[in-house]
Length: 290
Image 1 (cartoon, rainbow, N blue to C red):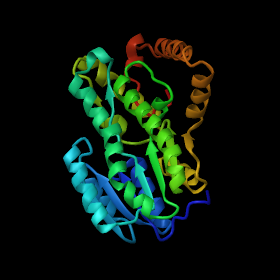
Image 2: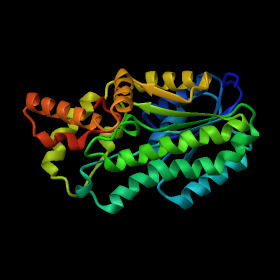
Image 3: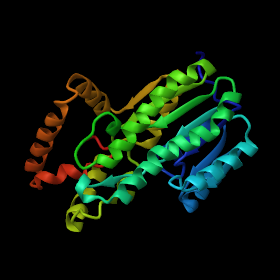
Image 4: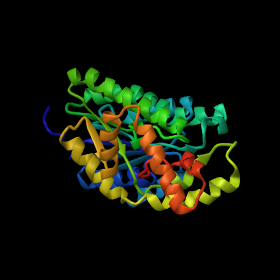
């Protein structure tokens, strides 16, 4: 498959109001692409769109809402019969052990992170097929490679995105569509501060650790965006961002069961040195260096 050509095409990016999505939008417009940006945060999305040159279209949508997603997809298709790049970047997080979250909270994460990706991809696939040399990018996570305690909902959603993307990579190859799964780790985005905490998690415990995990998210989203788009240009099937993600990927493949014990031991050592409770590992934030 030849290298991806950015200039002159249309890119659809979800979760574009901040973080990796915003950084991707800025990089893509600099590469000569027209943009269709989606996010649930109307004010932030409008600010990002207004700051970008070129042709930029914006749609406010809650991807957890199936009918709203279908409606926005129809509007996008009406204006763009051909789409060269679709980036499913939007995501939400939920901290807490499985027995500390409600099923409604758990399902909310699945609806946004996984079903939102599935629905939008399904709706816009005809436009990707109509554009020669198109490409699909789905954001999984470091937690789509490993599954630490306290992140059952998030990991379930991101492992699902990973499996969905790997299947599509095989299915869409015959159509000449490239497909990339992205596994970021430690990116300085708003997902940590905007993450929900399970209803059963003690409030004082959640508050005590939120700042700790925010401190661990260090990589500039612009750097992550550059890595992703380099992978798109080269038609990489899989992109891991940060050294931690690469190391833990090897660990999980080498010790597919035993890696959990290694992570638990590392968490206990960290907690002891920090003077914090052992169970702090249950609130690991997604895309943190773990």
